[in-house]
Length: 108
Image 1 (cartoon, rainbow, N blue to C red):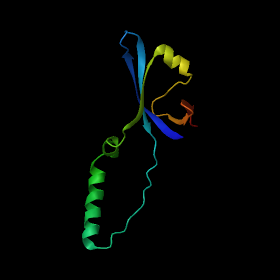
Image 2 (spheres, rainbow, N blue to C red):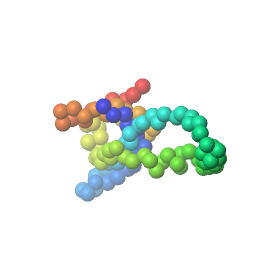
Image 3 (cartoon, rainbow, N blue to C red):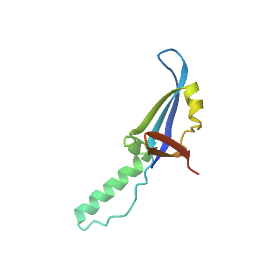
Image 4 (cartoon, rainbow, N blue to C red):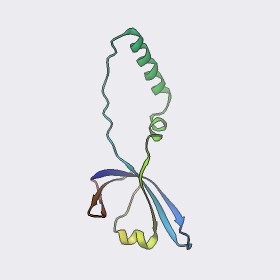
């Protein structure tokens, strides 16, 4: 089981010209934040410089480079309807891979 978040949904046309959707899913991970107390004066100075930079640079741009797609679905409108789940951007889903099947369940 993996938690995935819908990062992007785009309108596409398949090679036959049928309208469809491109759904980009990224793995949802909780990155623990903990404070590390540096033992040396140099380490404390480096930590303060890094903290100052983090305040100046938006966090989203720093983290966006680390969000590699877990799965990208290319579905025609018919296939999307047959899947039976309506994806919403930024919504988290439970993705289960069992016996050659993929199951999506919306997380509450």
